[in-house]
Length: 198
Image (cartoon, rainbow, N blue to C red; front, side):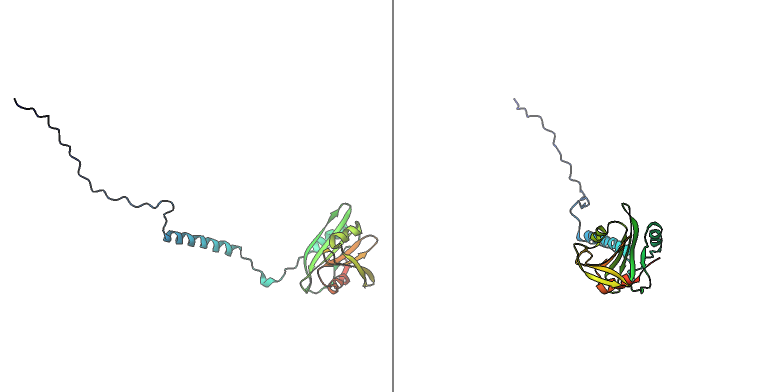
């Protein structure tokens, strides 16, 4: 008898490995090269330069531009029941920088701020409201330190106040006038001497 052999199994042939080209290397997040970072940095620096260049201001040598306060002065003169004072005859080295008029309750107020020739602040404040409230707004906590006569009028000196360290106060019947600032007393007196009604 013959032995039977098990049926032959079909030979399994494995496909020949195909030559697989490597996939192009993709640079995922976090795998940038130094060159990529340098290019990105250059783009950011160019943008910063453009923003700075567009925002650069011409300071014209640091010279203050004077404010034309004539309209505000005319408005104050048309509203106030008192003589509104403004400087007349000051040299151009006194630069007006702020002006306003308004109401504080029933009181009419007038303000003119200037930069003095020494580069300090000096301002004129007028109000027909409470005199001590006006002085407190300008030179709160200051002490009366004497009297000075300017153009025949007696001005009270208030020293050491806040926000302004020096103040000259002219107490009138209808209006209180304060000349105050961080400027020297001599400059404040020059400003007070120049004040005239329009």
